[in-house]
Length: 283
Image 1: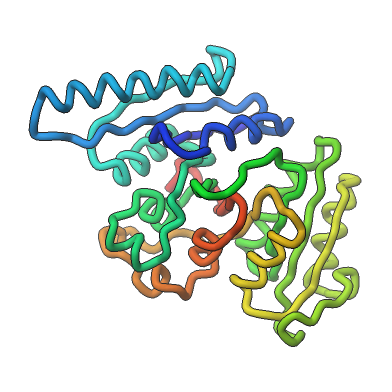
Image 2: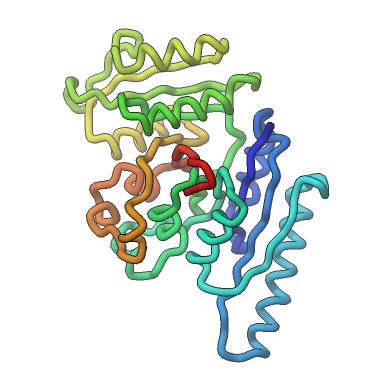
């Protein structure tokens, strides 16, 4: 059984191409896809009508490019603040995964420019795949997973295994940023207790696994490894969103650089899937 995927489509970027590659994964090939295009509400009715028409054309082109069966895809044209509408529609549909493009703005700039992807990335409790405009999108043959003892990392590992286990020619690259090692120092992943259970879990499904235990700052080290190892996607676990009482307030501590997931969002040389555990009813 596949998933419910929400593609937030602005009509630009590479999110549609990324979704096509996602749908080649056996586990996801039967997923139900909703393509959402949001038109910002305007004062002028005439201008709004023009934007609505352009939005309808964007959705038609997306349907044609994705080449999915009619019973597997639907479209939704909505009006409002894009960052709020994406969150609302994801909750309404109980989406398992949000796919959207990103300009890859650095943290402070993304706050000041009111970045849609940054807002959704920060506040959604759902798994989310971000596709920067300036990265080269490829078939998902090499998926890099950040491994550590946390429940969030375990969630990402489990999801990555599910994606890869029934596919031929796929490889998991398991990475542990080992605090016991000096920056740049690398040892065999087989000897790292943090990686051993992850390696065993992947090998149970005969998955081609590479494991890396390395010292260094987590964000820069993961991004550098993704480039060196030619990773097609990074999967990263993230704790649940902040309490709803704080939902209207930007989490400046995380946005300004203490969040590993936000660092990876900005600097990764490939798409990034932020994995979060789905809760009953998406709450």
